[in-house]
Image (cartoon, rainbow, N blue to C red; front, side, top):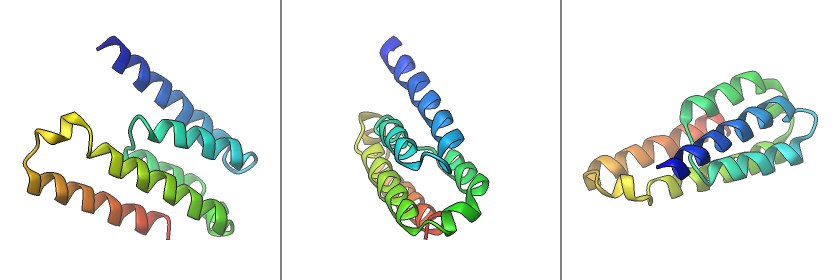
Length: 108
């Protein structure tokens, strides 16, 4: 349990740092986001990231595409984890599809 808590704290710190530097050091930010996404992806955090960087992301297609790919991979991996295996199949698939659709909307 302690390891999971430490992973989550590290994920949050990486995500926070990535948000701070995205527009001026996007390569480092994408690396941090990828590391964070390997632990978990939360749609409200993605929504916040997009809202704070909306204009910049719209003008940077390559970064937006790479960000979408990282987050989609993290989102899919999220539903392969043990805690989601206990969820009814239909609910899990529905939740996964909803998130993938939302990521597509946020990062076209």
